[in-house]
Image 1 (tube, rainbow, N blue to C red):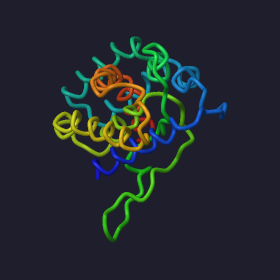
Image 2 (tube, rainbow, N blue to C red; image 1 turned 120 degrees about the vertical axis):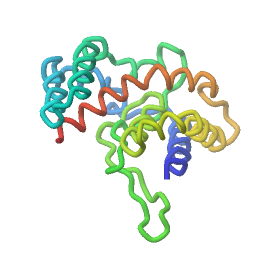
Image 3 (cartoon, rainbow, N blue to C red; image 1 turned 180 degrees about the horizontal axis):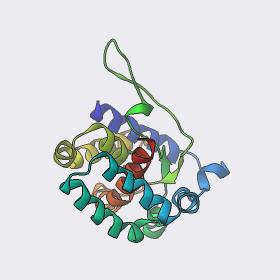
Length: 196
């Protein structure tokens, strides 16, 4: 399913490049707004809940590391601004892509739709790929397939641009992918922890 999702994301990104976005909702600084909604101490509290669920030495050590990292990433809007900093056109990003927002046909197993666009914003589509991979794959599966999924998404983007130039090269997207992963992971994991 992940290959189908990667291809669908590439196609959506290509479609979003064919017109200039005009909706003010897409221009918002999604991650900046998140920092206003969830102050640092609230964010830290979400992760403390994880230790309450699993009080093992391993989880406590991990939560201490997360606690130390949070000030570095909290309030960072890099995922919303990296396209500006690197000088390329942004694409449409779902912003909340996890397994609960992917509809699969029960009969044939094909992807039907990507839903829940309330967190949609402009950025780099690899954000969505990271988020769905975090929720759908084990850490080992994610590490093994990450490059292949980024390549699949990028190839679909290029195939669906109808001959237009892509906003970035595959090599650039792979670098951006590595840069954005911690930002996407930290935001996404905190949301899941707050639901638990």
